[in-house]
Length: 486
Ligand code: GLN
Image (tube, rainbow, N blue to C red; front, side, top):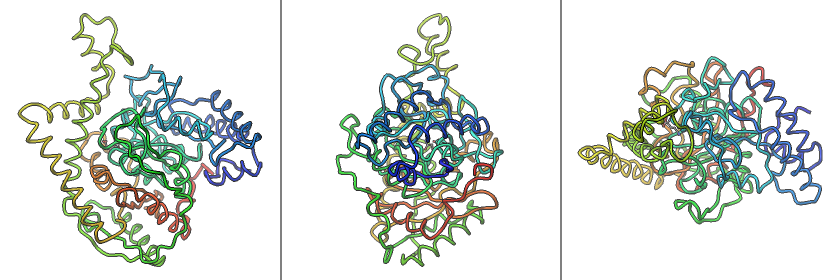
């Protein structure tokens, strides 16, 4: 049996029926990572020994009749989630030597469910990027075309799942970092409502935007994974105390009468025609399933990227001030005095993109500029949220492309940060508003996968996953495997 081809649901069933053991499965995937990941660079750390111990424990739990749905299922975590006793680098030289002394809540929840962690995945440094090229550990390659980026910042998670090295992985999404790599790698990726998934132990980039979520092959798998990830956490002050629905139990509901809005602003200049064509084809499928589709307006869409690039750097400059060479992480050699320690530690420990963000953030927060930039951006953020609330008075979900283009060549946008920032033009607004959104594969532009985004109102993850699942029952884009990864 080709175990690597099976998704989360299929593996859970195979384990439950005793068709394979978790140890067998874990060994098979670890061997596959050893054999193939030299090409992709999707893992920063592979936790081989620990994975085999967890797998043996999962098999014991199953034999004792104590298994849950994810017991024994292998997963990987983006290297932004703290893992007790395991290096947690955030793909930065600053944390290259950092062994986390505790588990993030998300990691702890997977452990409690009996899932097996294969390792920690590559990412853009501190999750800043859209191409996975800012990693201290080098770029990740897209399994669909090794000369192209997998998207970012959760590029390692996306490449690992697309290459069938692991059935599912965690990611984080501050401005698109789950959905955009999911789109570029042909996967299903979910950014939940802000506050749905705990941020405790998830290294902070921009705290009012960051949200963890799954990268999987199907909406059905994402529903199972999100059931484990989501939930109230008293250790995160922005976590929402609200029960987690059984997302997997409502899949398959009819889409009859579902109101879908197509924002005019998401189909304009800059959208590659092949991407537009694939998304329009998908709209026909939703209509066949009974959905009613109409045009809507989100008039402040053009303000989302500029607003984000004030708010996110401002929060990052504050969050990253903790890396001072004193308490943990990288420290420069032989500092002359305290000032020299700070300067050289941060100068040597951070990469160029992180420094750019810190400088922008410090600038927009400084006295004299605060009102003109930071305060203004907060007001625009409110207008962007109001656009969505007006739209959700008319429609149930908003549909559009996830990314204006498919995967671009490695290096293509490195010299031009604005071009890079525009990769997230359709994803960023959902973070500013705190709304749930997901990306699913909906076709190809040449040999490269295209992603479609669904955005919903607060806590409508179940409705989004159901719509995505119904679409995936009618199509097979999500089942396509990159050449060479069969
Ligand atoms: N690409 C965006 C950025 O660079 C979003 C990153 C993210 O979602 N973590 O900030």
